[in-house]
Structures are given as C-alpha cells and as structure tokens.
Amino acid sequence: MKPLCRLLLALALLLSSPAWARLDWSALEQYRPQQRLLYFEAASPALAGTLLVWPEQDRQHDWLAMAQYWQQRGWDFILLLPEPAQHSLDPATEQATPAQQAWLDRLGERLGQVLADTESAPPLLVLTQGSATPWYQQLVEAGRLPPPDALVVLDASPAGYARQQMLAMSLARSDYPVLDIYSHPHDPASRLNRLRRQYQATQREKNDYGQQHLQGHALLERHITAWLVRLGWLAPPPGAPDYLKGRIHETGISRSTDTGAGD
Image (tube, rainbow, N blue to C red):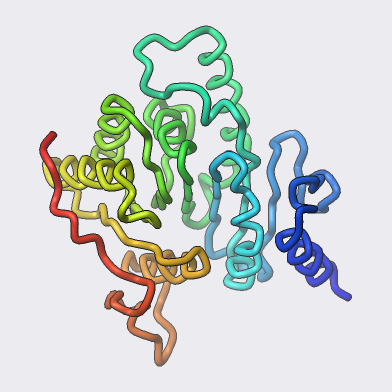
C-alpha cells in the first residue's frame, strides 16, 4: 500500500474514534517538529500554490482529510498545530502583558519560518479558523508575516465589542481578497460579527470582501475552489457545475443576506 494511502486510512480510523485525542503528530512523516505543523507536499512537480491552514484550538482534526484534495491539484498543504494561548489571550487588549508579547513574538518567528519559502513561490492562500484569525491579522499588519495573496476566514466570531470591531476594521483595510465563511447563521455572536465586518467593508469600499454560509464542512472545498475560480486563480474545468462559475445557489452554498450595521 502506498504511503499516502496508509496515511489516509490511519486518519480515517482516527477521525472516527476516540483515538484522535491521543494522536501523536510526531508519528506522521509529514510532521515538522521545529515549526509544529504537518506539511503535505503537492502531488505534481509544478506547484500551483500553497494553502496554509491555522485551525481553532482542538479543531485541527477537521482539516486532515482536506490535504489530499489540494495535493492532487498541485498545492502544498500546510496544517499548523494551534496553541492554547490563541484562545485564552485577548488580541484586543490595549496593553499586552510581557507574557502575551513574548508569546506573540514566538508565534511570529514560528510562522515566519513557515512562510519564508512561499514569498517567491506561486500564490499563498491562508485559511484561519476561529480565534486564529485576529492573531494572524495582527502579525500581518505588524509586518511580522508576509501578507497572503488571499485569505479565507472560517467561523471567526469573537465576543465583545472591542474584539469584534478590531477584527472588522483589520479585514476591511486589508489589501488582499477575503472570503468570510460562517456555519452558524443563527448564533448571535456570529451574526453580530458578520454585520460589523460587512459594514466596515462597505465603508472602506472593499469590493474583494465577501461572506458565504457553509452548510457542512464537507462542502468547504467547493466554496474555496469556486472563489479561486472567480479570483482567476483557477480555470473552471469543461462542464463545470454552477458553483464553479460564480452561481452559488446549489444546496449547501449560499450568500449572506446580511446588509450591514453601523454600530
């Protein structure tokens, strides 16, 4: 059995059992201990791009099954191990404690090493989930990390006005396209964050910002692929379905109907 097949079989068993909680990442050949990540190299020698995924704390298992999808399409797939501090610390604090600043410095160095080789490579697409999003934006805005060529945000719904407003303004003033995906449309925090971000994007005339509702994690590749087609990164294949041509009204794929808020 080929190494990739063995890996996928092992992951399938882990994801369907309590064994996931005991998974030792260092046992996987794709694990890079110094940077604390899994690096899945593209299946073809002609690299089409790099997808870096920074997941929410305790949600990294959601992303392992996605690696093969991007590998087969010529993309390097990088999955970071999240850190507890990204969820427990406050990115909107006006005066960071020495401990928080030290953690942020270490984080910048770690991710800087990861992204050092991508600056002269094909496009860099970054996906941040939940609490990873404001920290990533902070590092980019501070010049600690190179900006992505495009950013996908998934379920980033911080609580509290300061955190919500900080993230909304940060995304609105970014100079790269942003796809803002949410899977909990009726959650009050999710809705308020979406309203703030849509309002800020409209105020700043950020036309490359968009929101989409995700009705199932298995459909995430569709959202991202269709978006990249509309950005001109990917060509739609012959006979492509509607979701790859910008018409995203298939089951599970819909645009947000929020109109924005000025609070």
